[in-house]
Length: 198
Image (tube, rainbow, N blue to C red):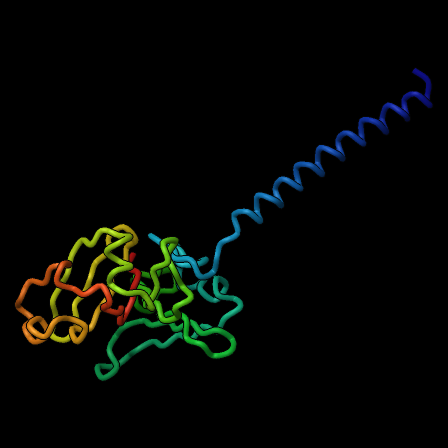
């Protein structure tokens, strides 16, 4: 093989390699786009980019486009919870996070109160939902009767919600000892608070 043939052969080989690399990179870019996380989707063990494994010291990176406000309580009047509030840059309150361990930056998040109604499960459940949205799409694992609210556990997504007892029939509003069944809760009863618990 003369020098000219060798150069042509090397050039053809390099073109093939370049084409293969371009195809691989295009595939990876496409894969990356298709697996992009919806920042407002929530489900079992995740809400947007926040997961069960996210540690306190990475929250500012996780919410890089938002404002992270840490309030560490330290006396008997305020309490002892390690609370982290997430706000959009414009000031809209999104989430309240609580870590598993106080004062530990390597601790993970254990409870998230969902404030913004744009956060939804893949079945559309949000803080603006009603009891009908829960019962039609999820299995209710427990209903707890408290003084002014009922607490509904939705084990499938690791969530619990409260509904004000003012949303219930009058005979159920003033007795915290009565066992309340799902059939007694009106479809139109609105969610008051929504939490994810990991």
